[in-house]
Length: 389
Ligand code: CMC
Image 1 (cartoon, rainbow, N blue to C red):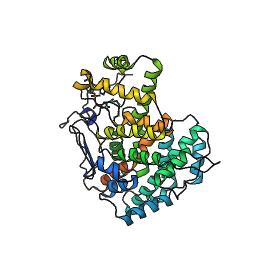
Image 2 (image 1 turned 180 degrees about the vertical axis):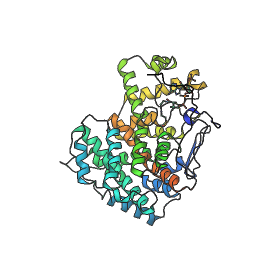
Image 3 (image 1 turned 90 degrees about the horizontal axis):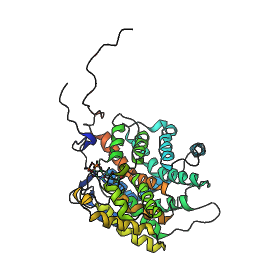
């Protein structure tokens, strides 16, 4: 009944209007609230960018310091929630730990979950921004079997996060400004990307009037998949396999082209960018810089560069307009910083959080929002009677 357009993967269907992020995939343009990503990533902080995405304009100095201050005040987790991490196995994937932790936030703040209350929406925003990095670091520490640290609110957002991941109880943590700057830039590059799979998930779940924690926990699970945020982890696994197998880049690319066992060149291709991903350009620039500054030499970076070179000169990739995406070089940098591979997608989640929040708020304050409810083309049996029994 009625007219239904079949559009697998929403290649042609806009599900919403939005004023947050602009992408021109053919020209490789990305803008947050109109500002080019190249300017944002080199001039703003993570929190300034978060404010821009969430509230629509750049913050004044007072707005920014007030925002920063409120977030610092909310970094502590309920002690019971800390124990929740103890119940999970040591080898749990930190993305599963993170989504469970965010879901659990709904159980601690039951009095402030009303999506129609501006105060509830505001405090949930602050709580998420403050607590997600802490939970992410706990997921990391848990996997190492190390003690959790309490946040140190005298530190900036990024330094606090680094200390929670790499500090220990026995000695003071020394801030490495090279590391902080590089991580901040990578997080900013991930802050929003309009209607990608995880953001669309956040909006869809939110359209049912589920609370912000529940919606964002769903977004984290969507991000986990290797075709989305999980690609940064998959890239490193792929590079390590190429190194360890000794088969060489050209041979591996041949196998990708032959679609052997469905393998893809991870970190390549994008639904929207049919030209170089502007984020990948910035990340590639950072990779050399950061590795040199940290004094790390990693043969995986050489393999990545060789792969890019081979692919960009190969008809298979050229004709399909497959270029490196944001995930191609990030893993090499995260590895140099000392993060285990399994933490890479968690870092993407911290980066993407402000975007998810901005979209959830835009969705819930738009009077035209309706519950998301796609149609289908039914191809099953016509009506029939059960056999007599
Ligand atoms: N390696 C080899 N072939 C590829 C790749 C790849 N990475 N990506 C697409 N193709 C081929 C695909 O096989 C198809 O070929 P054919 O026409 O012969 O069947 C053609 O290119 C079109 O691919 P598609 O799957 O229809 O494209 P899509 O827009 O549905 O998928 C994508 C986009 C990002 C899921 C895909 O390019 C991919 O799987 N890339 C690898 C995973 C990855 O790096 N994901 C991160 C995306 S960026 C950040 C993020 O969202 O997290």
